[in-house]
Image (cartoon, rainbow, N blue to C red):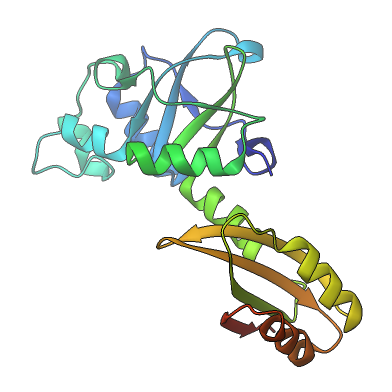
Length: 215
């Protein structure tokens, strides 16, 4: 899965010339946590920065809530361009979703602007990434999820395919991963006989780490 499948298109934006107070009001009205700062025409918006709720809060006096109506009596008049984060970390629409997750974790940020060429086309947040991974492992159409150990370099595909066919099960997803120095296989299945499938994993010499029955 790629970023373009999960990003929000047409994100809320401001120009670097707009005031901090206007940005705070925009965030409050739309109930959003960040705004992307752009220049250029609507058909080709060029990303120049990002501003968050925390950035705005720091621009107001410490005893003033920037999102309260009364805050306008103490509103800062300087432009967003003075407090925005310039040259934010970005990702492209065709990047794998795990690359977005890696960047969010590495840079300890909550969102990534999405670009195509030099144009802004969307934004992907940590919540969007969570939804994507839930789709992978959540098992909305599955009956059971089985996690089992693998030897180094071993693929789970052949074993899972053989056992699923033998016991009348439909494979919804299969993946392998490294966890705490161990290699694991994870499979989501529907239909058929899950207990016999699990027994087949054991008989093939693999330790079953966990079994989750899904509703």
